Length: 496
Ligand code: AMP
Ligand code: ZN
Image (cartoon, rainbow, N blue to C red; front, side, top):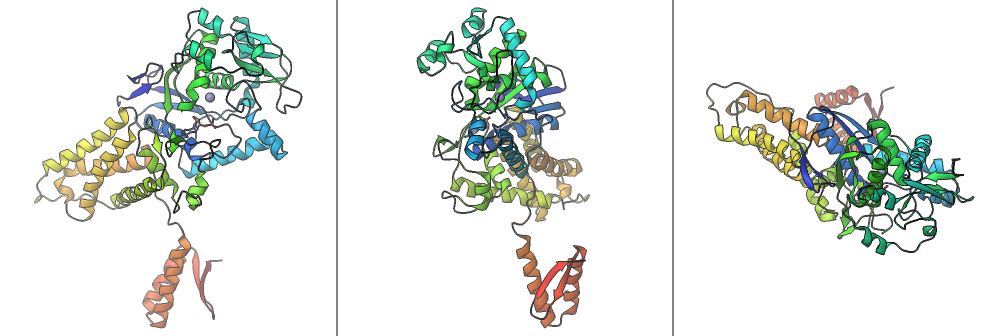
């Protein structure tokens, strides 16, 4: 099996990947808070874990991939105060919170499908795990690590650290600094320490989403839902937990505290964080007003764009950088990505037409053979090195060079020998399709091609070239279509 190294945010170094149970991988990725359309920044993070999931599966692991839907508890501002993001939208639009949830869950799925993401094995939602969350709160109170105050329940940071733990170890935050950063907010008075975070919040009467609990009507904290859903499906200790860099603190820091508090064990072996997609150096985010919706990109309908870009072009663009570096979004970079992606796509198309033929008169070209073998190995080495998709793509362009030479008859298949030839073709296809998740894209508009064919048909008919006329008719027929010779125009229709 390939030896994968991944950068663990917790240890701050690349580590050899060894799953807890050999051969099996449990992987949890924080899903979206479904109160608005996913933007391209979100897409970048989910892409990182799509590649990881594909790669782990491809190299032989059995992966259970869990990605949740946050449908309650994530408050405006990401802290313990403010309205629930979904509840707020529901009020604004005067509809049920679950309508907001459904609308944006549908959007999320639709967008991810357009980008050719594989669905997770389990997609749990926070509102579907209320019992587990209430049980976890009770358990933390019983263990003396949480306390009730005015109908809310808070995690006790002093108590936790007093037991030899280190709140802040993931994000590298220092408690004194955190304390200085903490503003005087409403509700802080309820806490023993301003750093304590809510695991259950009392709901004000006007708060729409609320559930009965031993502490009165309320709703669970955002951090607790991920602890409950990840450990329910992956066990109290699992292999990989991922999300965007901005989730390190407070979200994932709190998840570690809750996990350790509940089970006495660190919940996650490898923490992975994807870096941000930026626009002019600034994080892309809805609240900063610099976000791009995938639909705007596919339609070219954005003031910063001068054309439309297809989903695969955007996917390729994102793969050109390793997930831990920032990636800046620009029209020029997309244009370059479009060109490069099309070169690779053309290689993918022609690779399917290449066949090996023996030729005893052709000598083996050792140099080319070695270069191809090195490129294939280099692809794996790049992904093994903390998923370096940028270097992996560079190796594919070396492979592409030989595929094009074969296609142009500048290189005889026999010069590579059967084994290298076949591995070049099959690996290129696996890398392109299965591991990087790229795919052939249909012509932007099939209608344009059809109209061009009808134009030819009209010309052949005028010139009485009936053999050609029949050829075109047969082509349409083979596709369940017929050509209509109307008096005033030539058109096509579905064969009835
Ligand atoms: P949210 O719905 O805001 O919780 O975000 C869903 C996921 O997208 C989280 O893992 C975030 O870390 C990630 N994310 C948000 N903005 C960006 C960005 N500009 N670049 C990369 N990932 C992002
Ligand atoms: Zn989460």
